[in-house]
Length: 133
Image (cartoon, rainbow, N blue to C red; front, side, top):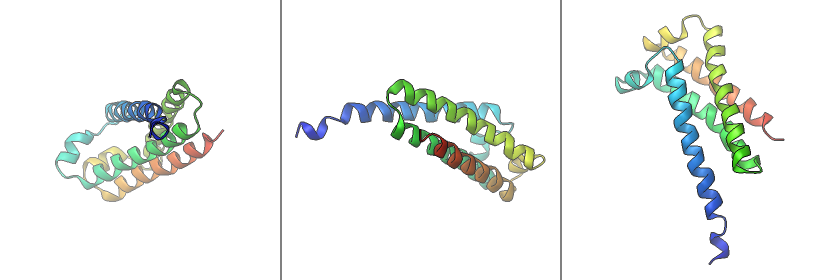
C-alpha cells in the first residue's frame, strides 16, 4: 500500500499550486479586462460566462502541459506564469480582432463571448503544445 501512495505528496503539491495558479489567473484576468466578469456572470450574462470559461479553459491547457512536462515545482510555476501572460495576451488579441469586444460582452452579445472564449482556447492549445519541450 505504501508504494501506491508514494506519489501523493508530489500530486498534492502540483494540484495545490495549480489551484493557486487558477486563482492568480482569474484575479489578474478579471482585473485587467474592462468588463466586470463576476457581476455579469451573477446577472446571467451568457456572453460573459462563455468568454470567462474560454479563458479558464485556455489557461488550463498550458497549465496541464506544464504540470506534465515540468522537472520541478519551480519549473512548473515558471511555465504557469508564462501561461498566465500568454492567456492575458489572448484577450487583447481577441479584443484587437473584434472592435469593442468588452462592450459587446457586457451587452450580452453571445457571439462576442464565443469569439473571446474561442480565441482564448485556440491560444491555449498553441501555448500548451509549445510547452512540450
